[in-house]
Image (tube, rainbow, N blue to C red):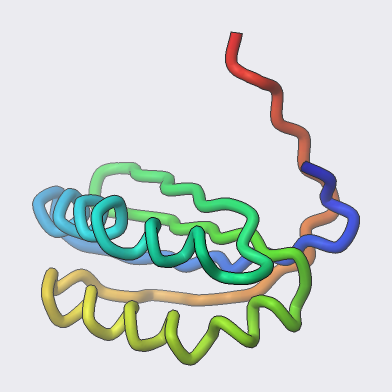
Length: 104
């Protein structure tokens, strides 16, 4: 995967360990299968540290990310209401470098 034109949405959430586990479960079962079908979607990363959760989605372009934004906002709202987790920030970044190695 090249970082040539990729953009990333980085969302920072806070919540209890149980809320975060609930979010991860909903994401695996409901959000990820749907997102995989979206044009321009290239990847998803969850980073967890105690009461913090970072969710990073990767897209082929800003246009692809924006085309997905209305549906993504609906999902964020549903997840927040269902789990009680708090969205602290949601920002978009240009990916300047990305290197992934295949599993050994």
